[in-house]
Length: 211
Image (cartoon, rainbow, N blue to C red; front, side, top):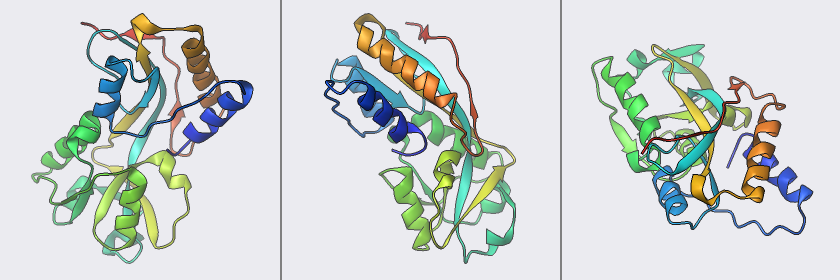
């Protein structure tokens, strides 16, 4: 968990001391399945469910950045184009971890005539930062992670094209409750009052995905 999420969870827990929170960190695909099976009440996802029965509110829209080892030849540039990465070893997330984000990055590479070549590494985006620090390649991270200062790492604006990702709070529309509504409202209130580098916070209406 990174960006504003830990602080949002803490302030919600502080406001409801009698509430037992059971947190789970899984891939987008697994979290969607757990929502559908009623194993989760609510999930924070990088992509909204596209099947019926789910409702979601968009919390944040931010760009992907390139994370690069400070010793790399591109580390002295202010921004990096996908075309600059054609012959580089790229560290990417598995598609099942976040399908829409994975596909958007692959499409951007294909627009410059190549497929990502390198290492597919499971785990969080933060684990990819560690791999980059060790010199294993170049990776892509949400801009909110770039607030973390890590030695031997540079974050660069990614252009041509810019690839953005949205964060959503999601729940099953037929299993809503006063507590879920309170958490959603809390997320929206907190995300719109926090300043996130390289991001813009947005508040959309709750809407249910079509069946």
